[in-house]
Amino acid sequence: MNVQAGLPAMDECVVEAENAASVLDCVMFYVLSSTPEIGLDIGLAEVKCKQFKFILLGLRLFVFCVVFELNCFECRAQVI
Image 1 (tube, rainbow, N blue to C red):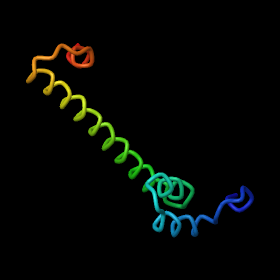
Image 2: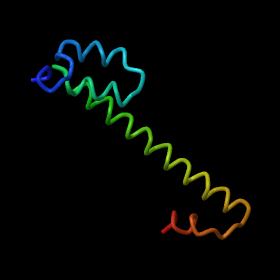
Image 3: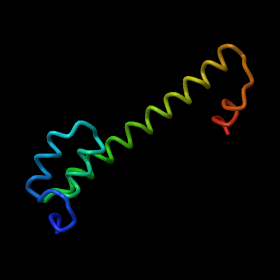
Image 4: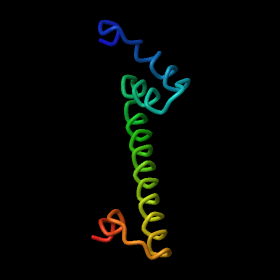
């Protein structure tokens, strides 16, 4: 089915995933391969990592505003 859709064969997808330059390409090729669960694990880990970075950024902004006694909208939204 992969070949009919113009995609690499399932075996080739594993090789492409291992050599992918970006996480998105890696996930895409693993999902198309015979081991899609690896792609899902990598993709979920990447999303969780980005969520954690976003939460840390919001926490830093909140701490900065508290330390410097700023009353910014973003900080009040974080607390609510």
